[in-house]
Length: 285
Image 1 (cartoon, rainbow, N blue to C red):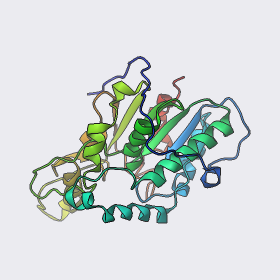
Image 2: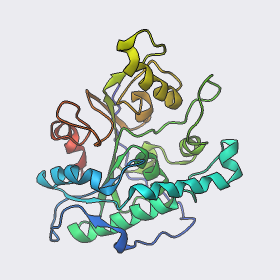
Image 3: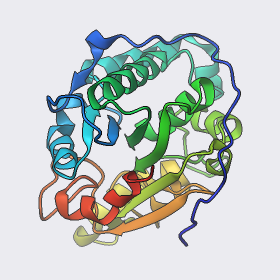
Image 4: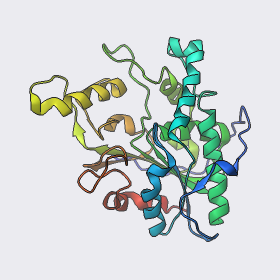
């Protein structure tokens, strides 16, 4: 069911544990534009993705009247997350997001600053793809929402991995459990939160024949995230995991997880015909 968010402004008072100062040299504006009154949008790349993967998406946002900036992330940057391997908590399954993802939080801060300067806007909309969704929650928890006017997540894993399910290993090593327990719920943030889930492929538990191969392989991935292989999802993130209690939860039929390999026949969240189904979520004041 879709849940509408209509809470009054309730700013978080959390003090940052470590200052993350914007570093404009690390920001790549997706489309060059002079300062205007266009609503500012910051796109946060997903795990394994890079800034350039979202060029077409950013251009589509610009065509719809937004000033779009994609956070500067290169594919090799994700190797920084391997720093978590040095922590005992990683092996115990109790890993916290920080300091492992501090580099990504810094890129969010950079992009927000650049987007405000480029657009002339006081606040930005965060459009967070995949792992960018839970990292945006960490960012807002520790650094507040004064610069944020709304959040839209695209196929993001937002709920903790179920424990004690045979065959399930928490690939985040405890990070999603921490985020669920410690980050503000949508109703507590004071800004609208929309969580989009794609319904691209149904997973299956067992391999019943050659025709089930894709559903079986995808289902095994779903199981590691939501605890069950028999679930609908976007090919990576199950619908149930991409929705968050207290948010405006939307399920999009026939939508694939990532811009990589997407097409008109296999559209992702940013494909024009899909984007037009949810773009108004970004038009809040």
